[in-house]
Image (cartoon, rainbow, N blue to C red; front, side, top):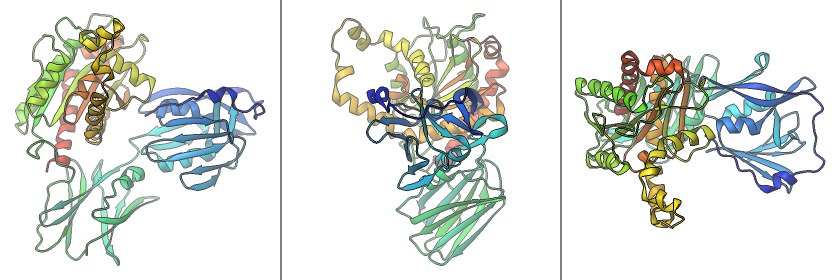
Length: 498
């Protein structure tokens, strides 16, 4: 989730700025099971951390402006503005006090961890905590158990759903002004995500309130709330509230934008990466990415066919080469409702480990860009645009503004649903796989950009790591990965099928 904008004025920023005399050190950042280090220093018993370093890991945009000595940090929903050497900062339209000033040092912006992290926690969709005794910033996407919200018009009224990670006790009460209040015992609410789901077609406003031992979601509907029912559904766990217009019967179907040509999630295309002369990454003991991807794909297809809820199509079911166009055509001609591309990762650093789940969007960190470059390399080699580029020629595919607009539309049309499925896979992987979690990320994968449906690319581990290479050659591990993806697939169907 990262893009850094560093303008030339950074080099000219302030001649006389505060440069701490305290000895430099580093602190730890834990994200999705991975551990990183960022620069820090202590000043008068206060730990300052590099926001520049944190943004490198987590994402957003950091922009420097010489005039006014200001630095802004923005993510998808919020914007912070800091003034060097001032404790005051703006968050969207409000001004707050950090107690301790923002500091510029050696090309980086430093902020006091103890007072800034709670503000950052307000706006992120993950839980972020400063652990003073461990000198650690912890980013935890698994902290929340009330994780999403949806509302949809049904034939007999509205269906509101609150998505949970587990069954939780709850109470519902309706108050004056058509306020529906849902109090969830032991609920930890992902407030930024929940509040982002407010649908102005059906409600005036929405609030989320967190206290010790409970969370509450309240929303004020535009229609009268006179006749309503509720229940706790499973697979995935969710609170369903049906609000009737006239004669009422509980509608247990789920919410979400209907996907697919027939409003059903029933055609799944599995794309085992590489194949034929394209081996993909090769491990130190000879494991080939193309074989790993195909073996996992076969296990996943077996599960899908056994349950008979879906029709499964594989872009390849044996060791053969496929072009990018062929893979995309198979999915698009089949009317795919979901496209799953399977791979294994690699790194020049042999100690790097873990699985990743990617969806299609502009890459926001170097790690995601590196994975996309690795997986896209074979398509560059087969593509006329690449050959033309090598020969110094212009090629319409690279420079055609109309094609660029079409590609951008493809990239964004199913981005929310693709991200949602990626998060479901992430949740199942964390439960079922015993290797480190590298979490959900985004990047510009060619194979996903040509498929007109929600899609993800899954890196099931690092074939370049000897320990994970051994796992990736194991049928037991293939089955675990396939089972986790299949459970996520059923969750996706439950949420989005119209």
